[in-house]
Image (cartoon, rainbow, N blue to C red; front, side, top):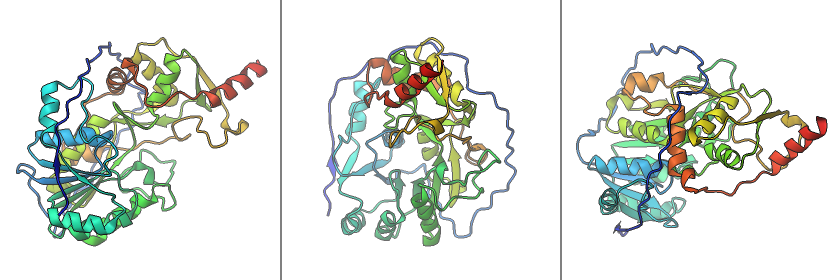
Amino acid sequence: MAKMMMLQQHQPSFSLLTSSLSDFNGAKLHLQVQYKRKVHQPKGALYVSASSEKKILIMGGTRFIGVFLSRLLVKEGHQVTLFTRGKSPIAKQLPGESDQDFADFSSKILHLKGDRKDYDFVKSSLSAEGFDVVYDINGREAEEVEPIIDALPKLEQYIYCSSAGVYLKSDILPHCEEDAVDPKSRHKGKLETESLLQSKGVNWTSIRPVYIYGPLNYNPVEEWFFHRLKAGRPIPVPNSGIQISQLGHVKDLATAFLNVLGNEKASREIFNISGEKYVTFDGLAKACAKAGGFPEPEIVHYNPKEFDFGKKKAFPFRDQHFFASVEKAKHVLGWKPEFDLVEGLTDSYNLDFGRGTFRKEADFTTDDMILSKKLVLQ
């Protein structure tokens, strides 16, 4: 039987920095999406009670989404095990988290060490331990999911973190859960996983976030802007800067994951999860400036087709309109985002960047290429 480890770690706490909030809430694009579809409960849908203590396995859990989700689940009284390769600490004190809260969490979280691509180990260890619910927040391919399902014949619910990136590019927005998907997208593995879950007959729920931001974000979303703002540099934005996008705070995403647990209305359903409002690229640059207490930024627009950036990514967002409706989640789950855009960016800045903690070093190579050409043309 795989060894289960109870962790007790003690690390210094961090003080929470303060910052004034702004009333800037991103682009005020009023697109009314009324969710009128009647939700039919599929035959044979399984029911798992969220009120009773569950034995929960999180695939991953030591970074970003998993850090906040695991804390919510432990606070709800569930027994939570993280399945990881053991390369990162299983419990690490968060900025602003009290010593008592961290001690309580770290004394209850469990760890199962292994590689999810070692399918024989996955089957043997999971079948030996048995779990009621699986949260799969780092699965990318369907073949990684099948052994988990096979190992847990009595599984009550499989909750999967998919992506809004599966939708087929369209001129009709926002994306809704019933919209066409792109089988050739870079997230095709997540699409195939959703299909596998449907075919296996398990009680599943799939969450499709758009862009996720917030404290501990390892993707250069808000960090990309904060790097340039802190350095006092112009912010290069492709084309017109009025491309509309959408960001959802990681804590709101974690709450949505909690809301689907044991919720019979979430059985065999897909939900988009993100912020309620949409924002332009230029608006996002301004929102980051307000969140960090910086002056309004100098924004430089450029045509990406005029540059050869090689393999470097000059901008952290796809250069197109990209946003999704969260009306289904609000209507069916009763979920609602807590953070508006500037509040969420302020939370991220205070807990990470305000303490001088950048997860990646700034790379202004592509910026310099853009700005140099702009100076020549002036």
